[in-house]
Image 1 (tube, rainbow, N blue to C red):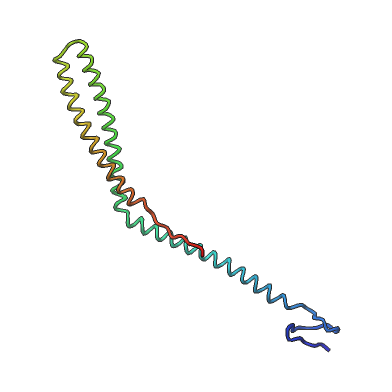
Image 2 (cartoon, rainbow, N blue to C red):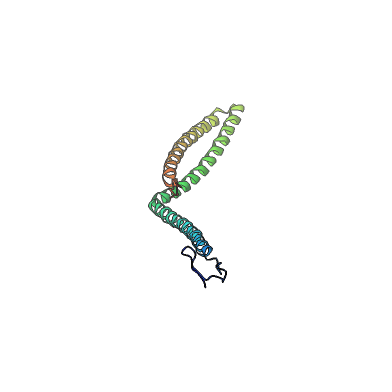
Length: 157
């Protein structure tokens, strides 16, 4: 006859030993279920944080879109002003060279004409530099405002 043990129910051989050792079946199945549940939970947490960051960053970009447009316009203005300043610098250098040449030939009338042109260009240059610096300040302020992106980061316990 087979006897059944309360701790290990199941079919027994005629000598009383269990035909199948069922004690490991439930443990291994539950440990693999726990392992699988942990993996699925970990993947869900990662997916949650990825989706949360995409939404969060998208909302920040939407919030700063007006400032980003202003920043793009200012960058274009800076490039235009930089090109104009470079051209003005070369004109000032050319005018200075012409002044030195007239000074060397003792032609004071032409020298004085060049001095007036030179002074006008230098004043224009100073004005353009001040305007350029003001635009750089505006661009830096906007860049700091737009460039700060926040992320949702999980912090482990």
